[in-house]
Image (cartoon, rainbow, N blue to C red):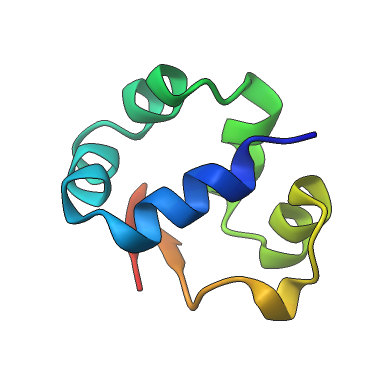
Length: 73
């Protein structure tokens, strides 16, 4: 199972984690343990692909935006 849901939950709840992600997304995702496929899908910003990889419904994703590697809610 993908760790992507856990990473999304962390980013949703932890401002320091969001800041670390925005400062260096690759390093933050690697440190968390996301594999290359999870990282690529996350950085694509494609909510359907993210949800599919995470094994959840896209409607259950937080209102997130990934623009120029910056994450916003």
